[in-house]
Image 1 (spheres, one colour):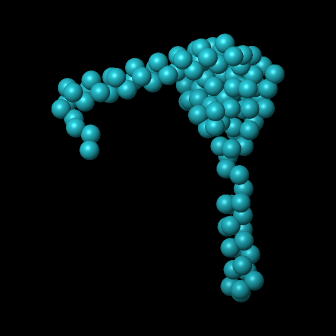
Image 2 (cartoon, helix red, strand yellow):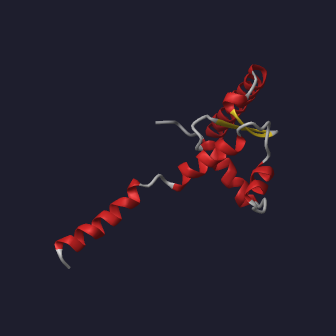
Length: 120
């Protein structure tokens, strides 16, 4: 193999890392899909892609929301762009999410007590 061939192979290999990852492309699609929409369910998102709303597919939609860096929120009603939420919607979502977080934290602390777990 010549140096030129090796360089070409290396360049091809490195190009893989220069491409944005699939997650970021999917998240950007998701954000564009939600523009101008009100609360949108996972089923509606998947229907827009022509996909069946399986549990795995719904999990993928939740993953996109998680990877959106706060641009998309998920809630009981579905998914919505954070910037498109009214002040009342955002405050309600925020307070409910913080309450749920506190509830989970309390549950962890109570199970720590049952196990006799001491954080290090």
